[in-house]
Amino acid sequence: MLTQGILTKKHTGFEAKNPTGSLSIFRIQACRKRVFLSCLIQYVANATGALVISYCSAIICTILGLTGYLQLLMYSVYMPIEALDRLFSMLTIERTGRRFVCRRFFPA
Image (cartoon, rainbow, N blue to C red; front, side, top):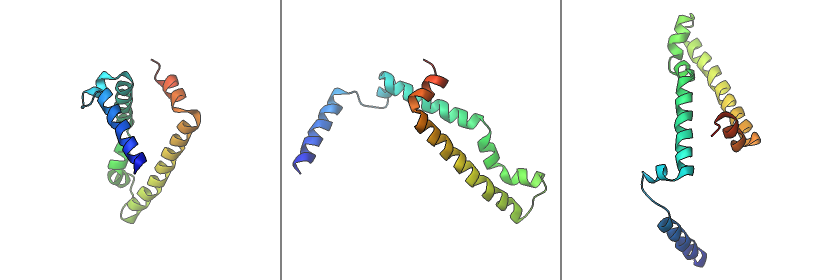
């Protein structure tokens, strides 16, 4: 109980020193950079077209001549491959370091 009280006092002091509110993320340079990078990642994810494949897989399979259960089978094959791809990307970034990736692809 004693340590919880100490941590609460430290956290309260931390919040008192730092600005709060939704606009404060744009006033702090480190937060501003994180917001920019997160918006950029969301944009790039939408711009690649991978989401279109996921959303329109039934239409794509119909155009390819796959009907019935084959559409679901193809989607069930696609999703684990996509999950493994995301896992591989995450592990690569963790291994090389986020700073290396940010410096290499997003130079300041």
